[in-house]
Image (cartoon, rainbow, N blue to C red; front, side, top):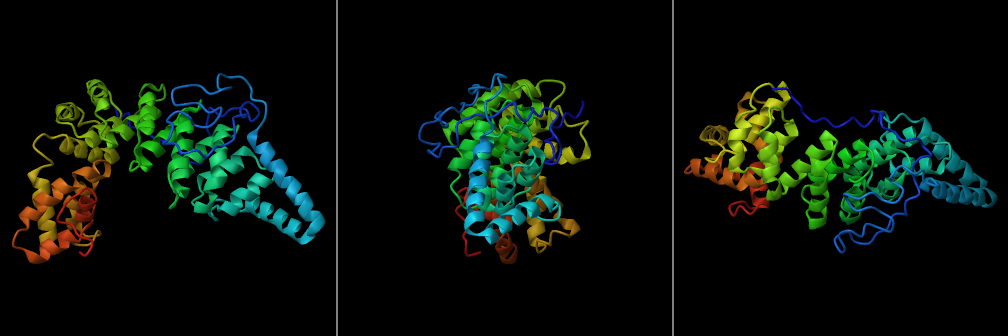
Length: 383
C-alpha cells in the first residue's frame, strides 16, 4: 500500500496556482454580522460554501480591494505631512522597517502588517510572508478584510494565520472568514481554510460550519477533501461514516482518512483500518496504530491501560524519561479523539485503587484534566 499521506504546503512555499495580481478582487468588503445568525448570509457579495461568488468564474475583477485601503492611508499620510512632518517621517520609517526586517528574525506584528498595507510598493509575496508568520492578536482586524485579496498567496496566508491571531476574541468573525476561504477558487487556500476550521478550531461547532465542511467532501483537491473529512470526524458527525467506509475499502488511502476513522471511532471501521497497517512512513505509523485502537469495539486495549497505571504508580516520570511510552501512545489517541479521555481516565483510576500517591498523580495529570473537560466527575481543578 502506498503512503498517500496528506501534506499541507509550508507557509513560505509559493503556490503554483497563483493568480495574476490583477485577475482577482472586487468582492464586497468584510462585514461583521454574526455568522451563527443566518447560515448563508456571509456578507454581501460573498459566496456560501459550495457556490461560486460573483466573479469567481474566471472573469477579471475590476479592482484590488487593498487599493482603497492604501489610498486612504496615503491620504492620511499626506495630511500628516502637512500637519506633522515628524509623524509622516515616522510612518515612512515604519514601512521601511517592515519591508526590510527578515520575517525569520522578527516576528511580524500588527504594526508590521499595517505598515506593509500602507506601502503601495508592497508585493503580494511580501505581504503573504508577513501575514503567514503573524501571531499578534491585534492583527486580527487587519487580516479579516484580506480574505478578498487579489492574490491567492495572501488569501492562503490569511487562512493559515487567522487561528493564530484569534486570541481571546469571539471566533464568530474568524469562522465566517474561513467559511468564505473554504470556498476559494485556489486549492491551497481551501486546504488551509478547511484545516483551520476542521482541526485548529475543532472546539467551535455550528451547523453552518459542518455544512461547509460537508460540501468539501467532494472537493477535487485531495488535501482539502481530507481536511474536511477529519474536521467532521472530530465533531463526531456520523454522516461521514459511509464516506469513510467507502474510502477505507480502497487499496490506497490517505493518512488523514485514517486519522478521521480514529477521530470518529466507529467500530465498523476497525477491520477497514486494520487492512491498512503496513506501508506507511515512520511518522505515520503511530497515527495508524492510534486509529486501530480508537475503532476497536473492545476498547483502547488493556496493554495501554495497564501501562498507564504502571507509569503513574512509578511516579509518572518526566517527559524525557524512557518510561513514558504508554503516555505517548495515550497522547496520540487523544490528539484526534479527546472525548475518549473520560473512558481512559476511569479505567486507569480503577487500576490504581488503593495506591494513594499514584492516584493523586493521575488526578492531577493532563489526562484527568482532559477527562474533566469532557464531563469526568472525578476530576477537580484543586488537584
